[in-house]
Image (tube, rainbow, N blue to C red; front, side):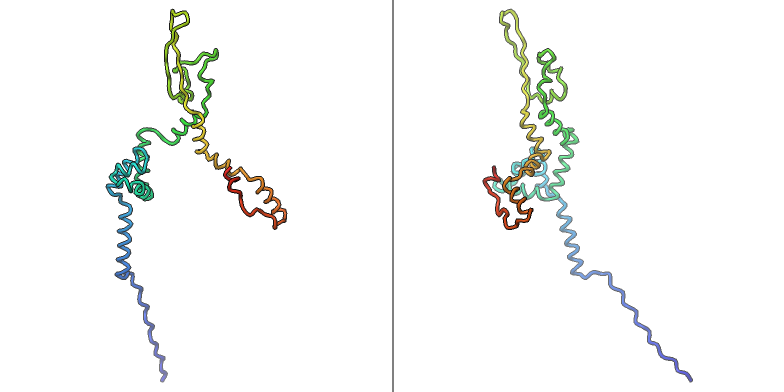
Length: 222
């Protein structure tokens, strides 16, 4: 009689429980609540946002929103660093632009008109000044004021109308354009201390023992 070997069935692996421990679940719920709290803006923060949109002065906006004058600057800085406040400000600015039609491109265009203003366009071919309605749009945009006066002729029998145009500051406009285009930073990068440049060339040629150890602060500031 043949005896068959006895086979012991293997125990089935116990499936891992998908349930989180009570402590971990509580921490997860707490994290969600904290995140939800961070995306909500308080009534006082909203008042700060509304006031900031008036003149974009953080300290004054904080004071008008009800913060103490002593802590207004600090609170303004803290508010402006909060994502929820920044998002509210950006949304408010977008609505302002939509209502007024004033965009960054529009402002930049107006600054460019002043900076690139050509005074020759104020005069006719015969040298006489143009009337205000004769000016093209670019030239008119550079005019900040008009003064009209009358003066008696030398013979005393008649009067002459004199029109004076006040032109916006061209240099200030060009400076703003320079900053916008980053031309100041580019110019600073292109300025190289001649002595340092010579020493660096010597060092690159193989004389490693001869190299600049420090920049001259006074020379750098100049």
